[in-house]
Image 1 (cartoon, chains in turn yellow, purple):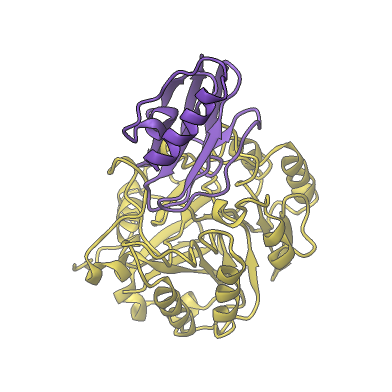
Image 2 (tube, chains in turn brown, red):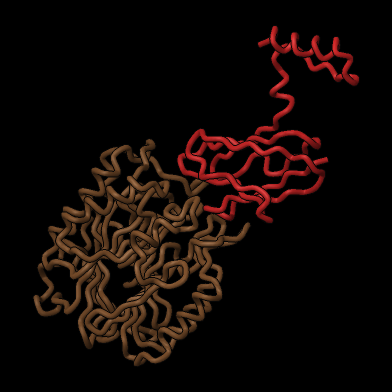
Length: 322
Length: 114
């Protein structure tokens, strides 16, 4: 596909720097690899094939990290009988990034069935990644049968409550949330009162210019409630973040790339490293999507996020494994 | 199996036990006593089932993804059921029992025990 040279924003009716047509183009490319930069409030999109055209200083970041998601170690059904192989390909992709990431976020469903050997495999394999630190939040597959106790023991040292925590890197506040516990019949993902109170306190005293990155397994925006692709009380959580200049929300769970910008908040979901899931409503259920073998790796991937001080937002780049 | 079953029945009759409702001895006994609910495409089928008091309900997962069977009030909860795993529960009291998948809570069902 030729993305052409007309990637600049042509119209900006709302004077918010985001042209709808340009933004949709950027979204459409996300699946094949695109770089979306918000520079000085202006959203720019480049296909990955045009990356060399970016001036080096524009592409250089003060902080670069990687999001991986939904490794589902232990899954062995028709949609991907080699999740170890695709996870290895994801690590190779990370190790091939032009600037090594400072750390990684894993946004859950590390394992398929919460089995110790599944967690072990992921932890062992990630030792060969160029970034050593990994920050995890659980998916619903990681808290099976034990309310997440094993997950917290492995990955949640020093975390609060069901496993939520925050930390600072280069002036960016990272907040890991847990929305896969105590799910109620008929409901969506759930943060719960205790976690919301903690979040409110955690960000209260931060300067409004502090860039915020929130990461959690289930999307914190409602994508498709019929399939449970949303979080019951996410609006409450986001209300604590509305005064900040730059908020980036990174999720997994839906095994496909989606992005939305709403005011100061950029929402982004990552591809899985294990198997794709159908577009919302495009199949009878959200179960693993079987695709021809040669297409599989094109639908799996990693996400690289770059931050430069003074820039309006963070640049989110998705790369497929294919 | 048939022989064993008959032998058991005969021995009870011989022992002069209370009146027995004789089951069909063609192997259908187990099928009559258990109601099966299929888990497929992220749903329970049938989603609403009515069963007699004292009967068993068996859920069988036919999806490529694990699910659980958990009653809303915590009365029963299965372990995670991987593909083809099953969970059986005996309902001994009349009532309406709502349940869901604790991993995918949009999946809900009801058992009415009469």
